[in-house]
Structures are given as C-alpha cells and as structure tokens.
Image (spheres, rainbow, N blue to C red):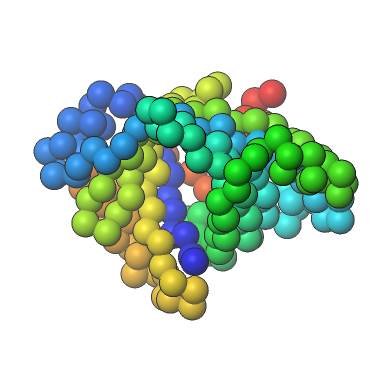
Length: 180
C-alpha cells in the first residue's frame, strides 16, 4: 500500500472541527494511540527515512496492536511512502523480540486522534503530547498507483479548509526529537 499523506499545523481543534462539519466531513472515531519507535541495528532509520513502530490504539474498550513499517518518502511535497502493517496480540513480547534482535527503542509518541471521513480522504485532528495541534489528510493507494493526483486532491482539500501553508513533512517522532 502507498500512503499519500500531508500534515499541517493548525491553530486549534475547535475551528477546524467547525470547518470540517461545514464541508460535510463525518466524525468516524476517536482514539488514543501510543507509538513505540525502534531503530535498526543495521541502518539508522533517521538517515534512511524509514520507520518501524509498534502502535497500540484504544477506542472505548477496544485495544488493537499493530507493527508498522514505513519506507522512505518518495517525493518532496508530502509524506507519501510505502506502508506495511500487521496486527499482533502482544506489544510487550513483540518489543522484547525486537530488542533481542538488536533494535533499540527510540521514543514513544502519544496522541489523541479524532478521525473524519470525507469522500475518499481520511482526515485526523492530532493532539500529540508535547506538540501544537496538527491535522493530517491521507489517501491510501494500491502499490504502483500514481500518487500525484491524490496529492493534488489533498492540497486542494487543505485549501478549501483555509490552510495554504504550515505543511510538515517531518514525522511526529522527528518533531519531538528536535524539541527534546
């Protein structure tokens, strides 16, 4: 899967929620996410622009755990990249396996995320511990699909929502690493 994603800093969540409602976007879910990022013993993911994480999501009483690999970004305008994700049962055991193989924990990123659906877009308002408010808009494409049209549509949607700057290609992990 290719994840075409663009992120922008926003002023506040309340104003953006009103704009999304006016646009016709539908609130789909709210969840807490904790991402534990790892670095490889072979290559420095910060240099190769890759990511390996264990994500635990909590929505109401439901908890889900995933391992996600994100490949390097494949363009200069967005965070478009290959993403591979699998569901697992036990984050502690998985973390132990990674560490026994030489992977090092880098940092945990914790956020409350409100999701919206609009046409074929997934929109999230992200309240990340230690950062300003952000909004992400993404479209998932099949491998090999042309992503440039999807990018253009994402930037058009940001413009409709009054956002024409403040775009960020840096991950939340990288933003937190710069601060601390």
